Length: 139
Image (tube, rainbow, N blue to C red; front, side):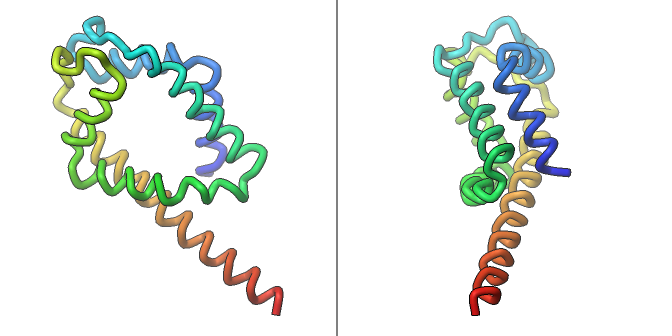
């Protein structure tokens, strides 16, 4: 179930990153029209979509490449959601201090971090089992 969902998200980010970012701004900010995206934000979102589709679509066995970054990102987002959000806003916007984040965004960031952490740890566990299965098959 996770792989098809990740593929859909990746395809959406590849095909329509502007729509996704605009929708996210309307959901997350009290003043969504105030935000000025950095020039690299949309191309990086599209690149993220390309990587998800490529890794999960064509090479599902390489999806384990994402396990460590996803686990670390999830840990940071779940432990310090406000700081993680501040860093994300600094990276994506030219004027992050002018944005008014809705009150539910920090708890949502923590929840998303927990989800990333679970997915990353499951990938580590699955990769470990695959390595053991390969070693057993070769003996």
